Length: 134
Image (cartoon, rainbow, N blue to C red; front, side, top):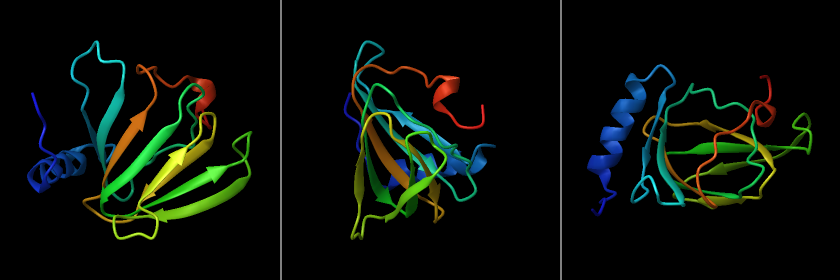
């Protein structure tokens, strides 16, 4: 079944994020559990804690559909700050491709922020060694 990504859907997801203790909520856009892609909408409210993490086996493409985020990148051991980008639909940066193994995190700067995340291959949970502070 098709999924229409419109303001009604984004508003619903945002309301769920605001009601969540984590201040974020995602929507799986895969066709079925057997679908080996990773495509999700992620509503992220300011104050949501997204730890510095990496995806060892997949790159990640992140597109901001509405709102604004700051994406931060760290060195190969996840300790030293390397770069930061403000990302929003109005640009100048509205999407990022994050190579596999890159330590990163993001912060929502506006209520109502929703991003589209796309990763390679089937979903694999992040291991403790791929999240700083665990």
